[in-house]
Length: 427
Image (cartoon, rainbow, N blue to C red; front, top):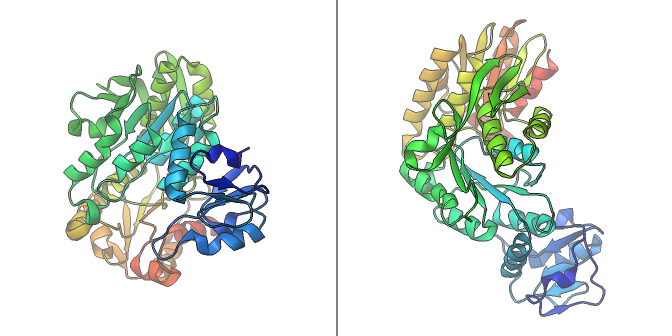
């Protein structure tokens, strides 16, 4: 339970009716008798506008500068939230921070399974991470925090909040270039996670793909990596390999997932945990929907539609290429690529043509992405469903366009989870 008095000495006063909560939220719609509300400044309005709604929903307390019932009053709710999070995080013995241009969520899922750790959900903003640290910082279990960025300076802020004992970078590639400018800037900004971490047996490690950007840093993966798996075998049924004598089998996994599992085992070994138990937990781990989830059936659907960047799409296409049967790529627009977006879509499209038997593209860069190009998602879907045959393997991948309306997503060729849903329903 989260004691409202634990916010002291940041709080000026705690209302006598304030009571402990199970967790915190900055979204008043999630407030309930078990969930306290933090009134934070937003881009368009301040959370103070929703304090009464949170109290009406039964919030045990509200972190705010307002003088209201059940208030934990502070001069600055955001600053108090972050300071409270730092204090709780300091109680934990092992915090792993993971960033990268692709593969963060996959790595987080396998590392958390191997370490039997608490881990961040998908939503990974600064307030979300602060709430997570307050809720789980005092746990005896390790913590695994996914740390994504889309602007200069954000990783430094995240590192200051999370203060990871182990910093991990999975990959470096062309992501969020509208704000970050160049891939070199992406590498520099994400590299903050490797600096000033605690002196542990493993304190910073990067995936083999990212090694060139961080010379001298330990690497994980296969081949010549510092922490390397051996005898990797990838089939349509999954991936298997050996790490430090421990056989590992991952159902419906490809090379990217196997590399993440090597990272997880290296960290488990460093923490003196049983590798056999870590491998068992990873075999049962589930990566959230939309991140390379293989759905076998009359035809196989590879749901990788959660998000997309050039490096992530090429990895997914490489995995598709390993399947038997007619290989079909269904690719939509990749967002936030700046002035180079057309060239980057064309490069990805060329790679798709080399790895897939049939290539579909949809949205603004449909022709670059596929031989069969469609302006809108409904047009694509009608053609795709009419063409699908038994034994096909269909990869679906695009950016989300989460802030767009359904009509905008359909017209721009993003948010292709609708395509995945229709394919699964049609089997």
